Image 1: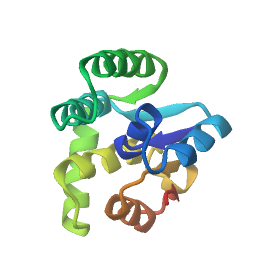
Image 2 (image 1 turned 180 degrees about the vertical axis):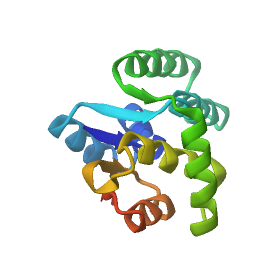
Image 3 (image 1 turned 90 degrees about the vertical axis):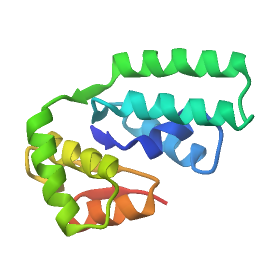
Length: 141
C-alpha cells in the first residue's frame, strides 16, 4: 500500500509529464490510500484544465466520473483532528502550503506515526522533500 498525494493522482487521469511513471507505480501496487479531500483536489484540477481550454466538456464529464470511481476504490484517511494537529506541526517545520501539510498529515496518520513503513507517492518537489525529511520513502521524479 502506498499513500498517494493528489499531484500523483492527476497524471493517472490526464496524460501529462509523469503519467507513465505513476502508471508504473500503480501497476506495481494498486492499493491506494489518500486524504479524504483528495477527490476535491482532483475535481479542482479537472475544472482548472477545463477553464483553460485543455479539456472539453465531454472530457471533463468523463474525468469527473473516473474520479468518483477511483475514490470508491481507494482507502481514505478521515481522522480529521489527528491530521489537522499534525498538519499544523508540519507547517512549523517545512515551507508547505496548507493543503500540502494536510496531505502529509494524512500520510502520517496512515502510517500510524511510523513514516518509514509507508511509501509516499508525490510529484510535487517541495512536498516530496518535506515527506522525505519526515522519514517517508518517497516515490517522486
